[in-house]
Length: 74
Image (tube, rainbow, N blue to C red; front, side):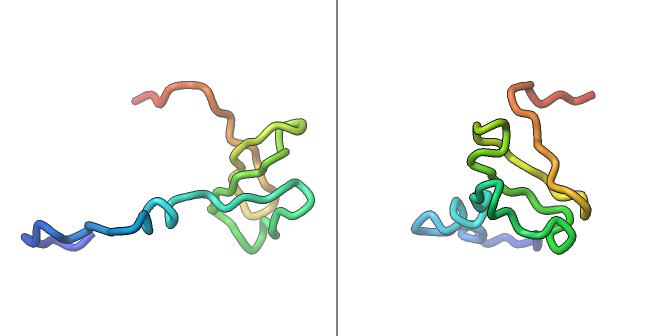
């Protein structure tokens, strides 16, 4: 993020920031190559035994991100 004194910097209209931050959705059958998407996060609509989940590419596989626990500092 650049340093700026402009109070308008970073303001985005028409929900474009929310769209940019939304994880793209796939089904298990349509997930893209993990090798070509290392470090990315996607939403898989049926990736947890038919239930939706987030997945992270380690460069080899798409790994489910377990949800439900609070973020912790340690």
